[in-house]
Amino acid sequence: MVLKTAQAFAFAVETAATIDELATLLEAIAHEMGFQHYALAHHVDVPRAPQPAIRVHNYPGEWEAWFDAERLGPSDPVHRASHLTSVGFPWSRLPQLIVITKRDEEILAHSRRVGLADGFTVPAHVPGESAGSCSFATAHGRTFRTEWMPLAQFVGATAFEGARRLSGVRRTDQDRPRLSDRQRDCIYWAARGKSDWETSQILGIGHDTAIQHMKEARSRYGVTNRTQLAIHALYDGALTFTDALKR
Amino acid sequence: MVLKTAQAFAFAVETAATIDELATLLEAIAHEMGFQHYALAHHVDVPRAPQPAIRVHNYPGEWEAWFDAERLGPSDPVHRASHLTSVGFPWSRLPQLIVITKRDEEILAHSRRVGLADGFTVPAHVPGESAGSCSFATAHGRTFRTEWMPLAQFVGATAFEGARRLSGVRRTDQDRPRLSDRQRDCIYWAARGKSDWETSQILGIGHDTAIQHMKEARSRYGVTNRTQLAIHALYDGALTFTDALKR
DNA sequence: GGTAAACTCCCCATTTCTGGGGAGTGGTCA
DNA sequence: TGACCACTCCCCAGAAATGGGGAGTTTACC
Image (tube, rainbow over all chains, first blue to last red; front, side):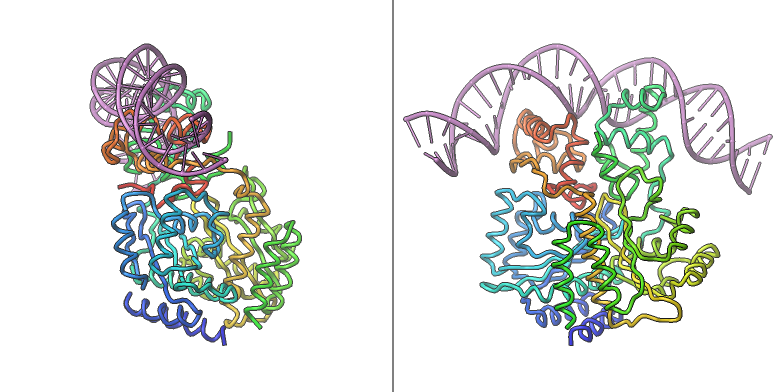
């Protein structure tokens, strides 16, 4: 019975003491759902460690080697798409979520070559802290059965939460930069493409003052330019896309 | 059969044309899971939010009035807890997630008074957007059955995604600019705070070439500086926050 | 064979950003 | 009262970004 399986999995994840245990659990339940592969990637404390802190998977060794070799570039399409939704998606829906470039097609073709035929990815985010995803994939020639999507959604989210607990990282409000009101105002307009001079006119302050606020904001986030400043502010919720994209 | 129910729900949400339809679907499936109430919301101060925010629910009218009067949007304990996890949680677990203040106790007591006895909340986060959640609650004196958690997790996430689509938080159907691979490479490094010269060294191309790719990318997005370029690329999935955040 | 697009490189002038320094006011809190 | 912080303004100099122009090669496709 499906709900029983899910409950048992949730309980097992909660009591798991190591990442290896989590991996074993994932492998077992992936098979039960008709998947041959799983991959859980968890980025702890993204601003400081963009590289995955937890990466558990049973993808073909070939795939990992290739992926790491090519790693200089932007990340793979599945990962990109997982930042755009809050619900799990089958890989067949990728083109609806992101624009597939030539390189993406290469990546997807290569993944099929090494035996990752079709899959389902569950995104997981905690504001200001961690981002990650949990994917399930089928081997050559098989397509996965959509009936399992609800369970996969639950399993993915639960597994991610387990990884989060095992990695021992919880956000504390202290280590998040605190911005003053004026600093936020300036970042807001900078994110909308305004120069410091334009911002100063909008806010009715001096040009130098606007510059000063931006300086201070950069130093709080520990970054050296306005692009990174805006991205960090977006990531931890000081800004939203609706703020930044309005004309 | 549970999986059938879930699939039917997912399909219905995908084809729903209005928020009202979504509300009807949620109400029905909430009842099926043994809940009398549901509430799907962005965690903003809805009455004065400058941006489009989602709120659909069948909580008692009394509750909504009080909620808005007290301006609980971001400070409600259930909402606060949902910012700290990526998986659904029963309200009985609140004390393990957040520190319950006196104020929180008042809020929870009031919610019980108006008829919200026990509940389960599914958080929903997409980087760069307002935090949100989908809750299910039982009426007076009833406790909910934990067997339904997996389904509730799926239903909550799916419903939130449907609400996102219907409220136009993210325009998915809009034609997004197509970037060449090199343009995306340059944006990728620019978003990580590199100057055009540094990017050129990383990619092994000339300084002028890197500048040229950035020019062309800006013009495709119709923006005039790299900050907006990076934000647009993040927004439509050409980049992820994991790509962009520092180091 | 012609066209389009991607990728590469070069020139110019101007604006904008960034990092370094300094200083004064007003408000809060111990 | 003193310490701290938010906010305001000022100067300087070098680095970087932006917008405009141009041009060659390769690859893919009709």
